[in-house]
Length: 597
Image (cartoon, rainbow, N blue to C red; front, side, top):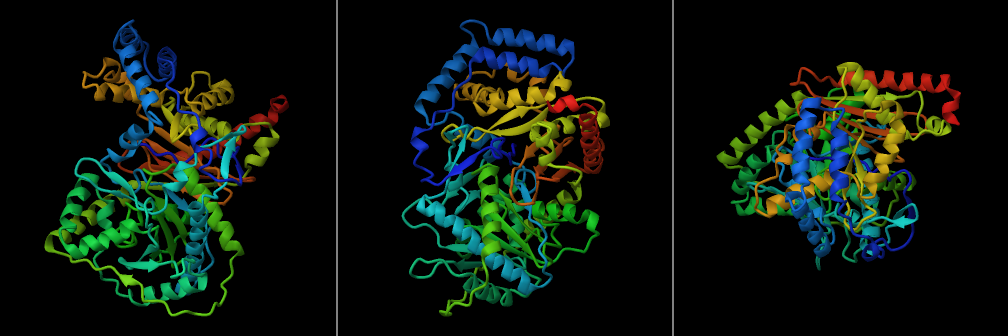
């Protein structure tokens, strides 16, 4: 399982108004790094993580792997052949190994959540007004996708791959018994013209285009949402959507059972094919201001449990916007089709659109009643729903989410000190973790590979033996990663090449050191959004943390997650320790004025 919200390129990427797929053919291919270089960097990365005895054993295995005419050279040649024959040697393997092969639930484990600033409404009218504007904003984004007028992003004067932006609408993950697939229904002669609305666990098809192809106005959408609300007032319906939150093998079996029924199959297909999904959530229990964002972040990740809004979802859908009756708003997204940048861009676009959009009373053309999707709940489906409810409630109690609104300074102050914001926060995370555990740990931060055709992400490993030179080391690693010269995806490629060749897996991949290196106790991601939002991600490993941060000008939004079932981890402790580390590092900066020179 891999999650990667951020692109390290996001703050520095510039947009240019020209056709966003015009540059695709001219983008360079992702390189296969030199074998010796990757192996040397792998050994250097292991040094602060394992004992000298383990290190010696790994060096011996590596020497054998690199032996002239040996298995390493053979796998490298296979990778280089694959790179010549494909547009991107990594992208298909990455999609499979990081997402579709994973059998863990997508809710909280791989699907990130986004909390938008709280909205000042407390009733259904406010909820529907907000939802109508949001829907219109997403359709405005879709207009740029359809017209291929989305601005191209550039980094250092070079265009970035925009392919992922075309994968987030009208797409959906489909469960399978052993592995899943992703289908993009927007590619083809007739792309979908409807969205899905879910309220009180009941699903509706809302056509969002008029017969002349123009999108519905905000006013028209509001009227349609009113109709949906008024025809879904019952709160005792079976939460069919909660099935999508289950372990993927379990959901795969339940899915096949569910769609045996023709009505169910048609209803499921309408959800899958929709442009996106909007969840009109019931209000959550009131909480004190100091934990408000933590509770809403959890709601965006999983819905709060079967008693609340976890059944008011279809977790396989790429985009789910969540609008609560109590003013809590945000989204969750299924991660397989795209990384964070398209989602962040979409959020920023929609928020800007909503600020300038007023409800305009247009001449009302009578619109048909939105179609309510029917489900036949057999005893077997009912049993599957009950099991999914139990599993979701266990997970909700297990996942601890803590939001830190660090208000003492932000990226403006760090910039004035000539500090790299991301590197500085990563160092603070290393310090925070070390103070709690008296040791460092494997740390993952995602970096974008979008300067290459169909590029997804590479891992920046921020743990270093030279913590005092950390910022400099981070910058170097960043450059390696975004230029396709880091180690993790190359190692994955060599491993997958070995599997494809049907030969026995090289011992280097069965070494305990490899397991240690891939066990990321700190899974981190920076999200560069213009919107003052909070992003959250679940931990990558049972005894780890998920940490997502959005540095604004004068403050930093951080979300920390951990599992309560692990006695060694505590999200609140790490959030507190991170706050202390950020303050201590500022004090250190101010004691050393030469640092800014």
